[in-house]
Length: 76
Image 1 (tube, helix red, strand yellow):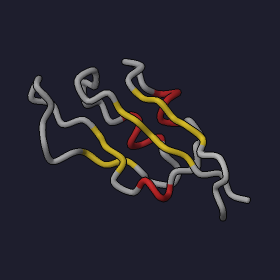
Image 2: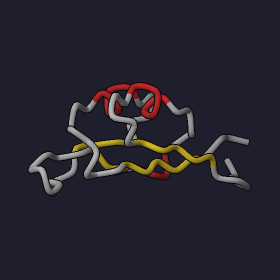
Image 3: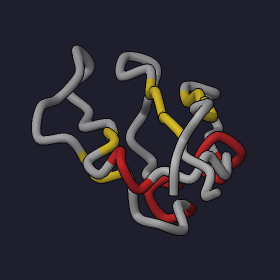
Image 4: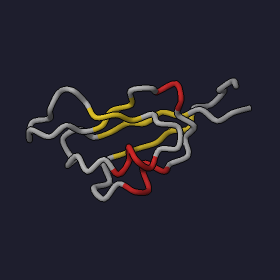
C-alpha cells in the first residue's frame, strides 16, 4: 500500500524561499497566487493527492512552518 499524506503550511510564517517546492519528489507544492499579509507568496499543496508523506518539505524548511501528516487507511 502506498503512503498518502497531507501537507499543511503556515502561510504567515513562510518567507517564500521555496526550498520545500524544490525538495518535494512528487511535485505537490507550488507558489500560491495570493500573497500572505507580508506580501509574500508562500507555497501551497497544489496537488495534495500526490503527497506520499515523505517529509522532505518539512526537513528543508528553515522557518519550521510546514507540517506533514501521514493519512491512515490510505489505499494505493
